[in-house]
Length: 172
Image (cartoon, rainbow, N blue to C red; front, side, top):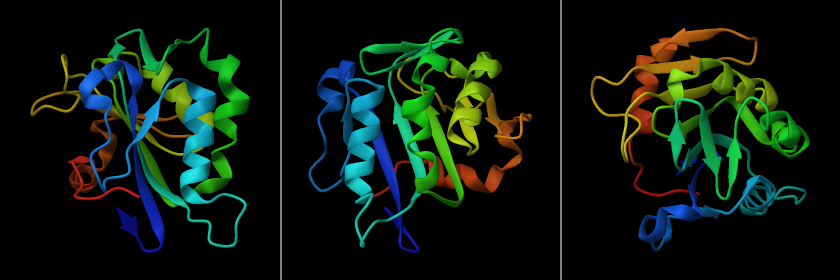
């Protein structure tokens, strides 16, 4: 999805099996780990080229629990997240003003400190939900938004942004 010259990207963990197969024309990125995901996102936006686009929405989907979330084959916890700080930081200059990250990892909003850690590393707001099973955002699920200034806001305080989290017709 293109947003004023910027792009929305969807990343899916390789452990999702058939769901991890990209839909034709939708541009999903299959993630096997943090370094590979970052490199794939940078390639997709054309980083370092004159035609480079900026990231407006980065939607990341994989397995999650109230204590961790997967990034492909890697499990992110409060202990492992700092080990990947340099990789995540490579994305920072490529976010558009007002950009956001959406975690589609079931249950992860039950661990606000972990969501906040990712927001601090990426320097953009990170939204997460408490839904279980295959959907982190079912009706009635608690949602949080961790801001890069350290605030964690219940329901994100951005009800209007919820429309941007629904499946989009085309990804960048």
